Each structure stands twice: as C-alpha cells, then as structure tokens.
Image (cartoon, rainbow, N blue to C red; front, side, top):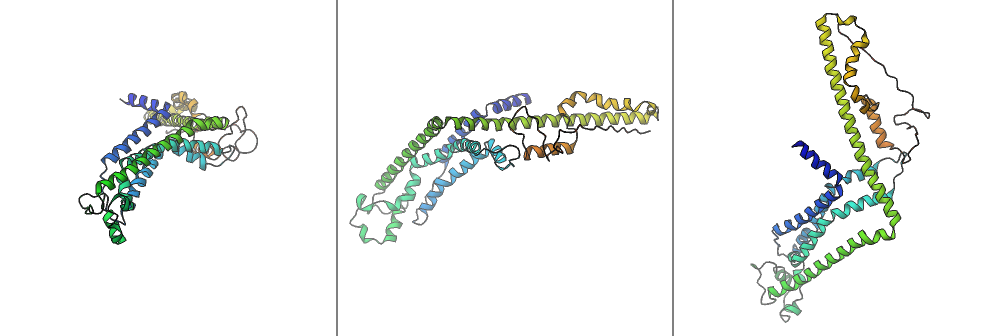
Amino acid sequence: TMDKFRMIFQFLQSNQESFMNGICGIMALASAQMYSAFDFNCPCLPGYNAAYSAGILLAPPLVLFLLGLVLNNNVSMLAEEWKRPPGRRAKDPAVLRYMFCSMAQRALIAPIVWVAVTLLDGKCFLCAFCTAVPVAALGNGSLAPSLPAPELARLLARVPCPEIYDGNWLLAREVAVRYLRCISQALGWSFVLLTTLLAFMVRSVRPCFTQAAFLKSKYWSHYIDIERKLFDETCTEHAKAFAKVCIQQFFEAMNHDLELGHAHGALAAAPAASAAASPLDGAEEERDKLRGITDRGTMNRLLTSWHKCKPPLRLGQEEPLLGNGWAGHGPRPPRKEVAIYFSKV
C-alpha cells in the first residue's frame, strides 16, 4: 500500500502542472456546486440588500482565490525567492512576476466561475438593485410620485421576497424580477466573454510580442523549481544517511562496550585501531552520501549559506564562499579529521 502511495506521489510531483490544473478545475466545479447548494436569503430591507449582495458576490471569490494560492506548492518558493538576500545571485523581477502570474491565473479560475454563476443566476443582482427598478416605465407610474421616497424604497426592497411583497398595485413582481434577471444574465455572459478574451490574450498573444523575455522568465522559473526540489531531495538523502550512520555507530559502540565489560579487560590489549574499525566498517557504504558533512554545526552552516548566499549561475568556476562556511579568500583548507577512541576496562 505504501509503495502505491509513493508511486502516486512521485507521479503527481513529475506532473505538477497537470495536477495543479486538475485541482483548479475541481475547485471551479466545487464553487459552482457550493453556489447551487447555498441558501440565498435576501433581507428585503432598503439598507441591507446591497450590502448582503455585495458580500455574497465578493467574499466567496476572495476566499476561493486565497485557497487556490494556498493549495499551490509554488507559493512558498515564490516567497522564499522574493525575500532571500541577493548574495552572489541577483534576483530577477521578471522571473518573480512570471511565477506570481502563473499562480494567480490558476487561482482565479474558481472565483471567476463563482462570479459568473452568481450573475447568470440573477438572485444576487435582483436583491442588490430591486430598489432601482424604473417604476414609471414598468409599473403604475401615476401612483409613484404620490409615495414618499422611504416608503417607495421599502416597497421595492421586498420584490425578492414573494411571501412579503405587497406592492402589486404599484408594480407587478414578475415584471420586476424578469427585468432585473435579464440585466444580470447579460452582465454574466459579458463577464464570461471578457474573461475568456483576456485569458486568450494572456496565454496566446502576449508571448508572441515578448517571446525572448517570456522564454527567459519561463526557463528560470522552472530552474528555481527544479533546484529547490533537488536540494530538498539531497537534504533528505543526507539526513537518512546521517541518521543511519549514527544509529549504526551507536549500536556497534554499545556492543563493543558490552564485550569489553564481559571480557574484563581481555579486549583492551588489542590495538585501538581494531576496536574502532568495527563502527566505521558498518557505515562505510553510507559515507559517500554524507558528502563530507558529518556534524551538526557544519550542516547548520551549510543550510544558512544556502539561504543567504546561493551559488552563482555560472558553471565550471569554483569560487569559495565568503563568510558562509568558507574562511578566507583562498581555497578551502583541507578538513582535519580527529579520531577519539573510548574503552571501558
């Protein structure tokens, strides 16, 4: 079972773009399903209809947009690249803009679907603009001037609520509902058309005019993503090897101490090198994975150096790190290894 989950996880990692597109599609369908299951209850009060409708139209898209950003794995990578010190590698604003635009485009799908479905349904628009219905053109215009403005607003604000609307003598409710829903659906289809044209312009036309800049931004965005994944994989591999060597040395050292205790000093006469050889032999195959980083302090300095001073994007040039793990301006000095042997006699 774990192997199957591991294979699925590796497949999703190798097809991250397709996976994120699928997540965005699922969120878009979920937003439409959420609206259909949402119980829209207009307050039918002059001072609250517009505020309630604006909240229904704007608040859920904002939540869906933030949720789309949270579900995107590249958000932390973008924040890290934006806030990191320049060090020996300059930051390219064009790459940061490309990364943010790529994430924002996917995150905007679900909010756009919510707004489009809300406008096409018409309930929200009806609740918001029911007090703006032209009574003189659609209803009994001769009676409208005789009503005070607060009373007329109170009467029209009840149009979305058929159970409490009592103004059919002034304006037929069905006429007002059809009028406002027709406008709402026209706005909804216009919104869908404009967003579709905008998406077409962004995805298809824009790279044609700025092809070189687009390719460079896309390449270095992919490079940052791949570099971070490889660094995480290397750190994971090093951590596994480090833990394995520590555990092997611990068990072999305990076994050696027990043998020394039972032998009452018989093994103490053996050369110290043979006593220390057994822990090293068991972990020899993991030593190459440690890459010379064999203590906690050195590993912490390496991680700090990676955050503060990433290597320059120039291959084939071995330049020493200054102040982040290397000392001095010359080549790195050879590592001094000291072996200490303990024995209990």
